Image (cartoon, rainbow, N blue to C red):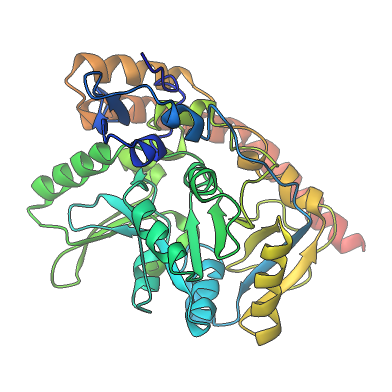
Length: 398
């Protein structure tokens, strides 16, 4: 009997399901709503292709970044409407001008997310902005196979585990330009759907659009918003305001199990370019330019360098080279995976005993967590005030 990667390590990329010559591997949800492969033992011929293609069991070659940049789109509107600096959107736009296809994550009417490809410029708006939820990638693989067989250029942006699967399937195809979005973790789709349904019931509204980082209240505030069919915003909350979904996500409580063992959360990358926020900007060498809407860009291959340089030379992207150590050292997701907290263990236990009801499991944890964080902030307040006074005095002396 074929043995796939253990359920706690499986990322749900679906490479095994795609490669199976008998079509006997189906992606199904488990009791925690995590999408996992299930083998039909009666159809399986034990060829082993599913095991060989798994990027966790048989990792792809990794790259050490060769350059690092602080960058943003030269179009301020593009940067404003994106999660960080609008780099992915700009690379897509430049790629379309060179007749390339683009692929990325879109949100469906039921708020599930999956990867698709195309040549329509309108896709860029659908790909734009953070999607803090699991996205299915395996339906994209047949599309990529067709495009690459026709020798079409394709730009793909996805999560590190998805990009690793694509590289495992299609090798180092010169027609593929791969971008990974540095990731904290992913939450099962059902949790988001349950959360939105509860809000709809309480507000007596129906949501047709949502944001995890709404640009209209600034992406850096991480505000979860819902809009109705008339374009009216009827819900807007941050983690500290008491949004259960944001609390579960940003406190690393509600991720897929595999996210707590992620082998891709490290400084060795599997793609051409890596995009992230830039928490350590200026920590090693002063950064004297505008800090608003800045992406951290890691250039990992010569192909990545050439693509990125083309957009810089066209004037589409503003970029300032930075020390690689600065880009990596201060970004936790480029060093290690999320850790399981006591809250996570309580969440798991409650989910398995309450029929996997996300809201019932998260509400008491959020209340307890926010109370604790408030006490810590009050305790640290005198220290912060003293530190601020010292900085003011130091600046006055200068």
